[in-house]
Image (cartoon, rainbow, N blue to C red):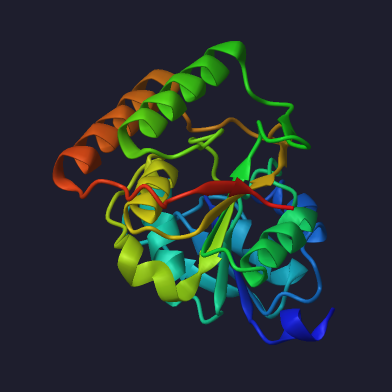
Length: 242
């Protein structure tokens, strides 16, 4: 770990509900230099918390007070103590070994490091043709309305400086949380860099994602934020992390 990295503390937020079988795989990929891991438990009925604590004795647990991925992440963000916040999934689809790329991107000057499965070097083992098409349409609408150059709107692997939490002012409960973050980061003129990421298939269990329902919520978020928000300045850029 270089001196620059050691100067910034890193918190990893893991929202989870009934992911006891997947957590050993997820935690095994986490770098040993991260400063804290926060598990946000959505009132699991299995051994999620016990397994997580056994795997990582220094784990911090936040028990979710409401429902939904968005609410879980917001509660995790509020509890984080690190300078940098990284959000990953508990189902094994996001690889903790990629955290270094996200952190390096922030240390190089970005405010928000946005994972992309479509950037060169990225990919997905899980995206169906239907979900991929929907994502591309929603990404295109966002780029048109906000002047951004995103390649992957609906992906939950992101990292950002904790000091921008107040600017993002997150306030949604569902899967549209990633879209809300991307839109508000752009509206605020933050320096956004996309980081190539390879999404893997969920290891155990079934996802709570519903393509039609959650796609509609994402679209409503895009349109609502554009109607009430300020236009993105022409200087706002989305760059690919080197």
